Image (cartoon, rainbow, N blue to C red; front, side, top):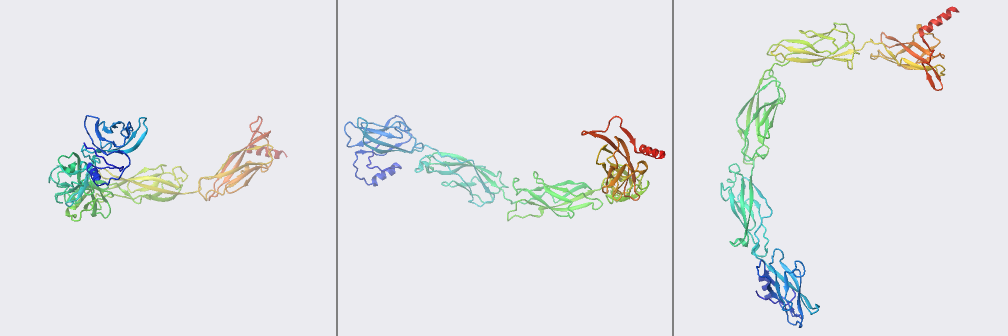
Amino acid sequence: MAELVIVGGKDIQGSLQDIFKFARTSPVPRQKRSIVVSPILIPENQRQPFPRDVGKVVDSDRPEGSKFRLTGKGVDQEPKGIFRINENTGSVSVTQTLDREMIATYQLFVETTDVNGKTLEGPVPLEVIVIDQNDNRPIFREGPYVGHVMEGSPTGTTVMRMTAFDADDPATDNALLRYNIRQQTPDKPSPNMFYIDPEKGDIVTVVSPALLDRETLENPKYELIIEAQDMAGLDVGLTGTATATIMIDDKNDHSPKFTKKEFQATVEEGAVGVIVNLTVEDKDDPATGAWRAAYTIINGNPGQSFEIHTNPQTNEGMLSVVKPLDYEISAFHTLLIKVENEDPLVPDVSYGPSSTATVHITVLDVNEGPVFYPDPMTVTRQENISVGSVLLTVNATDPDSLQHQTIRYSVYKDPAGWLNINPINGTVDTMAVLDRESPFVHNSVYTALFLAIDSGNPPATGTGTLLITLEDVNDNAPFIYPTVAEVCDDAKNLSVVILGASDKDLHPNTDPFKFEIHKQAVPDKVWKVSKINNTHALVSLLQNLNKANYHLPIMVTDSGKPPMTNITDLRVQVCSCKNSKVDCNAAGALHLSMTSLLLVSLFTLACL
């Protein structure tokens, strides 16, 4: 240990060598103060015993009885008690082991005081510098370390960079790191596939592009044990290690090839779905677009009856029929299919003859059901035509033209039971009256289904639809509504009810309607019917009537040719209306029909 006295208040930091250099080159100005302090240099990691003296403060003009006092972080501030000073001699001591990586310097202050503790001189700065020791190993803190390099990359291609951290003083060799590769796994095709820059930590390839071929490597993944050593790589330096994983990435340097030049497939006519799987080989990485196949039909598919898609698990081409094939049109099909990768090939690789294949497809004949033509079949007839009238003759043909089969016909669905079909020639006639107003007719159209059955084994069936449009005839008489009305016996307004009329037929067999009172049953001087419009009329009284129920026969006629007439009784209740109460059911009320009233009137006339 040496005592260094430096006169002046300038802070000094750095290594011991720098401090001595500073001491040799710095001018020493004149100072008036008497306290002289020197920076104290203490190595970290010192062992027992403690406390131990590490420096001394000198006061050339210290009054008798005065004392030294030391303050600052490490003395009376946290961390407390690390340093102390002999108040009489000025000797500074440390009480425990120091760690530079925790605190590299301590800024203390020295002053002299009288017996009462009053400051006589100072405070003067005292710097304690902890000298670094190589007590920290290099640490790789940023892992995991994974790098990628494309196969076939030129020699010297940078893969990745690995750097370690050393907590020691970066201004010393204690933190000066050097890197090297301790181990490579696997060690083929060369035990030295990579090199690491000892100073920067850059990992580069050192083998030729031919050796960096992913398809010929036992394993496209390499693991390197990287060592970082401080003290500039000297044997006395501390070391730390980490694992670098390097993946040899695939590029599309192999084209897909069909496993054979020709494939065979068989499919029944009329069927759809996958008919054959085309297999290919590709040496590239299955996890990349350099391996995934894309198939195209380049010839033999003018009707777009076929499609091909890639199975993502197996990379096979799934050839499908998407439009049913017809054996009678073509029993054989030949397709030319090519395969490519999703990713483009590298410039020096191209698709060869093995990237195309031929598929021969044989269509099997099956017994197909007869086909009606046209379908649907349409016919227009008047309703109410006579039973046995011929509507049409259906026509169904057998697609299996080479089998020369016969066809029989039958009724499949006839909701109203109106139709009959000749099983041999397909003639359809009526066996009941057609009614346009039937609930089985919708929008004047009746729908029936027929079957055509061939003589195959087993027989095949075809279905045809017949749409019969029924023209309206005036076969429905109109009807009135409502059929019940009420009126007060003392009513001033003699209007009874507004009648409406409706008809199930279509125009012109409906309105305008004609409303009348059946003259033969009702006297003329009591009731009146007045037209409102084409579909409505007003029934009114010509005089007040006694309280009773009256039945008025209303005759309504439509506009059909010939017209149709309907007579409906309108029941009119003449009620007692007093004190805002309507009573239509009082005892003693008369219940006279219009016919009875007519007979009474005739009898009266005879007596006169």
